[in-house]
Length: 253
Image (cartoon, rainbow, N blue to C red):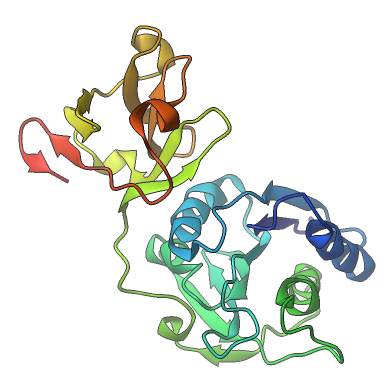
């Protein structure tokens, strides 16, 4: 049987020691398991944006993948418990602060556990290294019971909508990714923002250079871009910006 892989998804960035320390723990406990750096520039402390972005990315990974996902502004507090979620055969290890809500909301089946295991030494500010990385490593090897079974509502927020009509990520090109699945949007939909009406396009070259548009990105989300420009600067977009999507035939999404 193929050994699962571990995908790291954090807001740590590559500056500093934190990603390296996660990998060191996993390498020590599960040296044969491949580790994928999925993302480390998730919007800092923004659990809701991170949740919708994660859900859009997991489909490219095989069943059995273990996601060590850490966007954890409440680390070390009573605001959340460490949790494990299993959704459609993929594992998610991280804080029970809502980070896995969109994954569960879009899954046909899911279950959850509260992580009860603790190492001898736990830093109150780095559960990623001391709890989540070891648990992810052991789950990847099939050697670790996730913990105590809990209700999904104790691990995720089941009341969040399936789509989030706001910007959840700005990539290095200045493109603005939203939390809206493009398959849910009408073919004739436009986005009204910054005094401009942005049409739908198939790809960048469908509009003149310097023109703004929206399209379905490679992960199935509505994304706003400027052909050979930066949508964030030209339209004043940032993570958290509301994005009104309007069908020209039947009103707003």
